[in-house]
Length: 224
Ligand SMILES: *Cc1c(COP(=O)(O)O)cnc(C)c1O
Image (cartoon, rainbow, N blue to C red; front, side, top):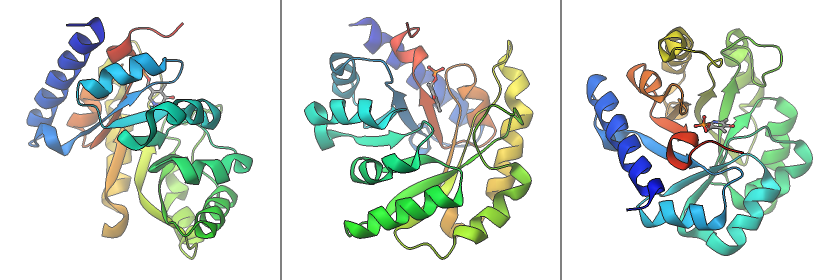
């Protein structure tokens, strides 16, 4: 068994255990393998192991990989998205996790409608409060949803957030609890995905209600 296959097996076991602790099943949690900087060969390895969801941070990098791997998997845009990349993004991605401005939401809607599509998106929330991080402020999420409610061509399917980098995963718990609280207040049509948890903190995120985790390092090893 390859190292990647072993790592993946262990990640899946840890997801199942955390799901169980939060009264859910492993199947309730979508695992996105985060493949920024990873090769097509590495991506194929995880697909061979049953991975169905791939997360990328840059539109161009995703396009190159998509050209060989194609629609065998769902592609997720998890990185910051610039408006001038919206056209390519709606063509490629099944779910865009990083909607954080009305202008971006409008451009995505416009581009999606132009190709007769409705694109699924998440609103990125800046739960860490760090100035350098993207995302809508937690207290502005409801107003933000109202401001984009009229947009055709997008469907808001939930929220995405990132905890700050910490030494001990336990320190991320209040951030995830806060995002779950916000998610619980959303109208049902928007309460499909709660995307939170990465290598450092995915078990805590699941315990706090995440149903979608984005994991790179624990599967592929450290990035260069
Ligand atoms: C890179 C990245 C991840 C995965 O990070 P790891 O620590 O490698 O698991 C998850 N989410 C986002 C938004 C990322 O940019």
